[in-house]
Amino acid sequence: MTAAAADVDDNAVVPGKSTTTVAMDFGRITLEDELILYLFGTPGQTRFWFMWDELVKGAIGAVVLVDTRRLADCFAAVDFFEQRSLPYVVGINCFDGVQAHAIEDVREALTISPEVPIMPCDARTRDSTKVLLIALVEYVLTLRGAAPAGAGAN
Picture 1: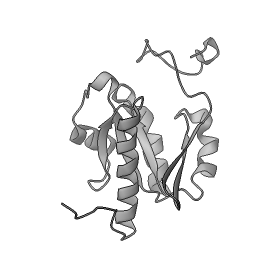
Picture 2 (picture 1 turned 30 degrees about the vertical axis):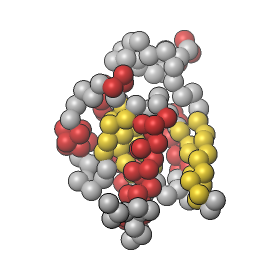
Picture 3 (picture 1 turned 135 degrees about the vertical axis):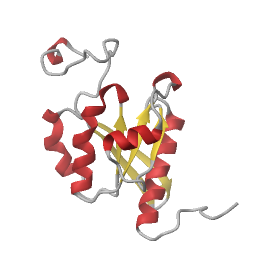
Picture 4 (picture 1 turned 30 degrees about the horizontal axis):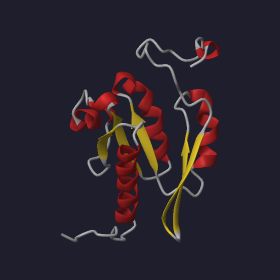
């Protein structure tokens, strides 16, 4: 984090935070030859909202990453995706494996529908984010009436 952001971003709730997404992250994951996910990560601050309308064009879904220390910052993202009927899942970012709040408490605080998947994750670890992205793809497939691969298999 830079001194330039000190007047714009309130870091009082997370004083030890030293890094942040400054514009946009991009990634690509190939699930199968014909199934490729393009991932765009944007900061949640209002000054970056101008990017959101463009990024959701053609999107199958979204992940709302929740830092429960700054829960109020998540309302805008939840509202944005709900207003556009874009499926989303919620990841409760558990720093160092610590989940400070129960999933149902977060669901209630953000007034998220019961069918929207909410799960703990650590956004800094590959396996944890992989599970969250799989949940998103499965949720979207379920909404579209297509059974996820391996669904129903024991």
